[in-house]
Image 1 (cartoon, helix red, strand yellow):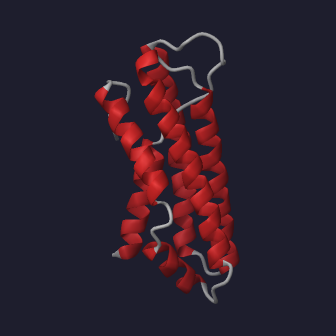
Image 2 (image 1 turned 45 degrees about the vertical axis):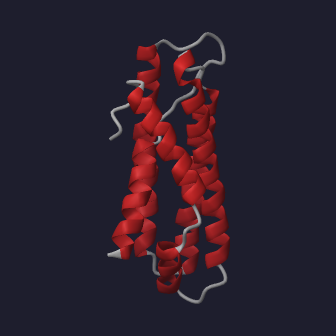
Length: 157
C-alpha cells in the first residue's frame, strides 16, 4: 500500500510536470505554450516509468541508478521549463514549476545518497516510501500546476 502511495506521488509529479525548450526570444503564444507543456508531459511520463522500475530493484545499486536517472531527467525537465518564455500571465507559475522540478531533483539525489548507507533494496524502498524528503518540491510543482490549470494552460492530468 505504501509502495503504491509512493508510486502515485511520483506519477502525479512527473505526469503533471510540463514544459519545453523555448528559444529565449519572443514570448510564446498561449497555444504554443500549451503545446510545449504537452511535449514535456511525454518526457515526464517516460521518466516516471523508468523510476517506477526502481521499486522492483533487487539491489541498492540498481535502485540508486534508477533514482539518479530520475533526478537527472527531472532536473532536465526543470531546465526546459525554466527556458520557456511563457505568456506573461503564466510567468510566475512557470518559474515555480521549474523551481519545484529542480527541488525534486535535488531531493531525489539526497535520498539516493541516504539509501547508499542501507543494507538491502527492501530497506531502501521502505525508506523511500516513508521519507518526506520531497515535500517542498512536490508542493511547488502542485501549486504551479494548479495555477497553470486555472489559467487554462494545462488540464491537470
